[in-house]
Image 1 (cartoon, rainbow, N blue to C red):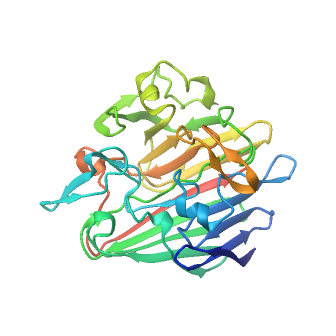
Image 2: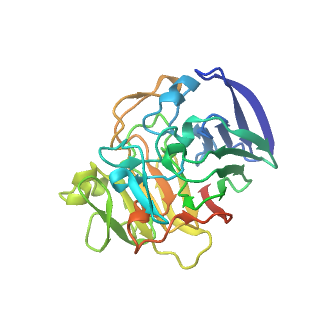
Length: 345
């Protein structure tokens, strides 16, 4: 186990950015920065033991200051979409930034992936924390927020979230890393095989806002209960796929208990890499990089459509406006905790 700290450059505001490099006994490495708590790189062995960086990202702070696709990003105060960019809490209506048509996506400005964090290292872990002030992005409450990344000797990248607010607020944080098990320069992920423990997904309006209905995946291209290649049905003549340009849907996880359990798996045959996803949250967004157009990434690689796949654990999108969905409201004085694990095997 080891942790190395290196300089990663300076933001446009003159803030010094540090990269934290975690390494386990198997040679697996995670590279994380205190600007945005972003995951920059994740080096994972293949079936021959050769390491490759399996997440999309950038080489410079300047690129992370733009990062329109949210590569490697810590997302908050509310990940995913809120319909009409507004919600009501305790009789007060809160207006949010309309940054996705008429809706709100991934919290607003400033994004949690575009602010500096205090960093504290532990036993092969690093905790990034800050206070998100009252009404930042339009949300009530001073929110003490942290994410701890731990790299274990079992080849797990473990993400522990913790938050506490002095007012009732929303808290729906997630990680937006794009994985490509062939390597970040591996091209399309349509050859990756995926399994998801979910019998349903949340139906959306034409602008991808969940409307409260849950659709049974049986007999649809959305069914991943038996492992299948992403590309098998991604171009199917099926309205939810057409609307999103591929998979960009919240799966209603069929969890047996409230705790952390395995909910998904992705594998790629040529490398022999497999990643398992564990969470204690009720939902997970499967996103196949449909909106990546042309992003100049690490090592001169240009990322395009479907070059990465995301597994974003979450409360259901728009849950604050759908009473039947599990609530993401964090009561004043309560502590929110959640764990997501990406395990490589």
